Length: 264
Image 1 (tube, rainbow, N blue to C red):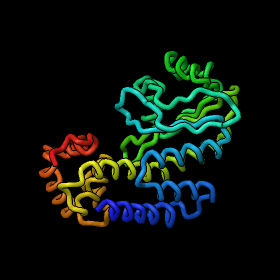
Image 2: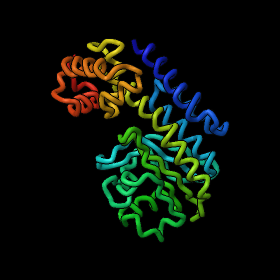
Image 3: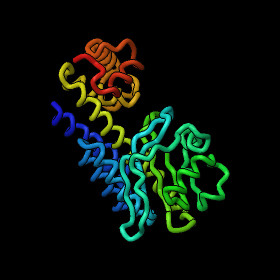
Image 4: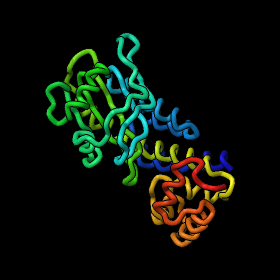
């Protein structure tokens, strides 16, 4: 069942992103998207592919990235891509506050936070600046990654050797790519990982619905993505909720994102 689900998700994303939306994407970013889709079975690998590619594409010193939602207390990077010729701290596992005004600005505004001199930027809270300075950051671009209105993660691009101006056109292009191409892949990888945690009681069709429901999508969005009728998806969601003992759609999303919480 899982192999079929991975393959069908890969095909859906290929059709949606590479064959239509991003058909004219420049070769480098198109290749990044394709490699992420190939690694859809491994969420960590998807983040790693993205971080490595963004570091090279933006020509920055370090990129860190990882899962996060708007309501999380902290953002903790799960991957880091860094220049080999510049000594710098590894920020993987570092807990950065997610509820400060500067970070929440990212979640509420559909644009990146760009600062060319971390020490002079008043938008960032001083405790956060202190943590970033301790990690060597001098200039920063932060992106809150979201898909279908749901938080997926955070990506940060750093210069650690000196404060430095960012190329606005390059940052805008990367932001569009992350939100429109990388975010759907990352959301799918997260959902597949969640569905894999609840394989026993769900049929293959229900697992596909559950994988998308885990991202917070409602039945109409799920129906559109799977090219099914809304009534069919609604019926399948009722069955999934019954099997996983979820009292509501919001409870189902919580159950799907808490491995082991449902009775199989």
